[in-house]
Image (cartoon, rainbow, N blue to C red; front, top):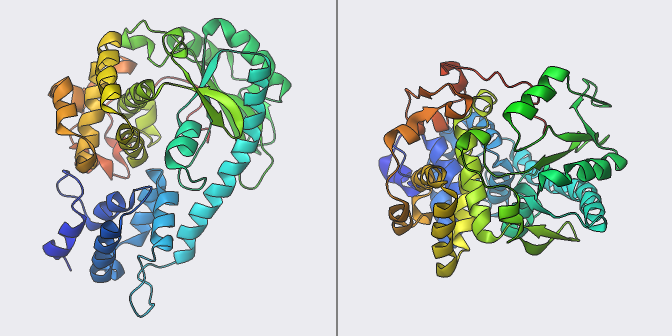
Length: 396
C-alpha cells in the first residue's frame, strides 16, 4: 500500500529508510500542531491509517517518551477520524488516557516535589531544578504533555550533607525499592563505593514510596556537575548556580539554569545517554523526546542568547556534546535547527557520531546507522560491550 506521494506528506526528517509509522511519530511529536501540519497528518492517515502497525506505534511512542503528546494530538485534533466519523486507529481510548493519565501523574508528582522545594528554600540552600520539571512547566506548558520522572537538583558538593538531612526528614532514603514497592532498601557497599569513586559528579538517588496507583515512587536525583568525570571538564555546580534565574516550580518560588545553560545541559545529557552502555542497555539512549526538548529550547533563544551559547560552549570545552546533539537533532527535526547554528560549531567528527561506550572506557563503533537504531526495538543485542556500573537501571 506504499504511496510515495502520500508518505512524502510526513517527510519531516533527513533520516532515510524510515517506515511509515516512524514518519508519523515524528510528525505528531509536536507540543502544538499548526493547521497545515494537522491537514498533512490527516491526509496521510486517511490514506494509510488502516494499514499501519498501530502496535508498533504504541510501543515506539512509549519508548520514545512521546505517548502523551501523540495521544493528545491524535484525539484533540481528531486526526484518526474520517469525514464520516469512522476511526482509523484501534483503541482510540488508549491515546487519550495516556495523555490524561500523564497529566494526573504529573500533578501528583508536582504536589510532592513542591514540598521538597519548599524545604530547600526554607533552609536557604543554593540549588537549581533541572530537566523534566523545568521543561514540563516552562516549555511545554501543559501538565499532560511531557512525562516527568525524578526531581533533578544541582547543588554544591559541600551542600550535600545538608540536602540529605532535609530530604530524609521528608521521608526519602537513598536506596532501591523492594519488589512490593513498599520500602526502600539501602544499596550494597559495592554499589555505593563504585558510584563514589567513578561517578563523583552525582549520587545515588533518594526514593520515597508513593503508595499511589498513578505514581509508584518519588525520586530525587542530586548532582554536583553537569559533566561526567571522564569528560575531563573541570566545571562544577558553582559555574552554573551563579547564573541561575528565578522561576516557579509546582507553585513554589525556585531557581533554574539560565536558558543558555539549559541548552548546554540538554546537549550534554543527550550525548552522554546516547553513548553510555547503561542507557543503551535499558533502551533510553535514543528518544525522540530528548531531541524535541532541545529544539523547543532553541526555539526560544534570542540572537544575543545564541551568541552567549557559543561562548559558553567554548568556555567549558563541551563542543563535542553540542555538535553531537545538534547534528542528530537536525536529522530528526531539520526544520527546527538552523544550518548556521550547525556551522557555528563545525561538522562533527564521524567517530564522534558513531562511537559508543567511551565514557565507560569501552569504546566501540555502531554497525547500524542512526536511522536504523532510532526505531530498532532490540538494538542492545548488538552491543559489543556491557555496563559494569551497579545500581539503579530504571527507577521511574
